[in-house]
Image (tube, rainbow, N blue to C red; front, side, top):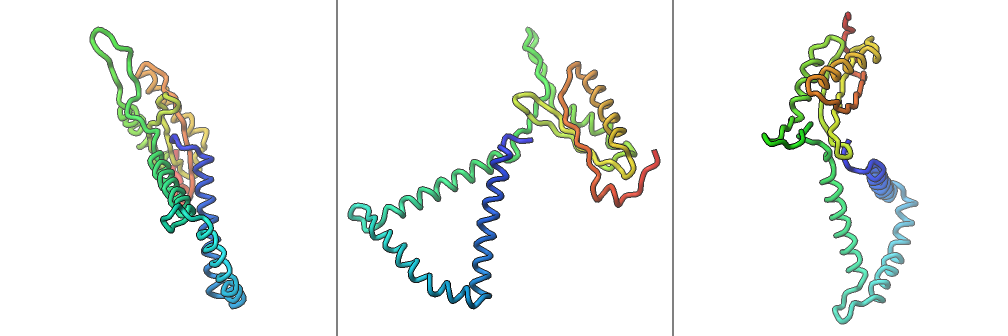
Length: 200
């Protein structure tokens, strides 16, 4: 739940992975396979001469350098800027303000997200049906939303966990006097399978 486009995120990871795998596989093939090594030795000089010809055919005024170098440097700069922007966008979406009342003559009341997070965490963390609980707050299209992630013990019904978390969230809404949107994530996984089942 951040403001990074999921499709863009996965595309960058997949493309980067494919490129690195291809380069690694090529290097291994050249190092280990005699036929590939021989073919590369025969092809490399021709490729080098072709690329050198491109650079010589595109001189930049009287500098003796090629316009191709300018394009390569510009592409690298853009790639670095894009990477920095991509990294800075990661993890965004968290917010520190849960509710803000309309201003009055006496001022404005603001409720910090830690109030809700600590209240929900405290209500759930000692429940024997759960192994762990994590509560965080995100801003989704300008609206604060709680994310409640819980790990259920082996043998505990997801329906039971859902009912339990819903009850806690409804009590929070009653306490704050407002309905807070929430995403509930229930998981089991390896930890739940290796822990002894709780009697509930």
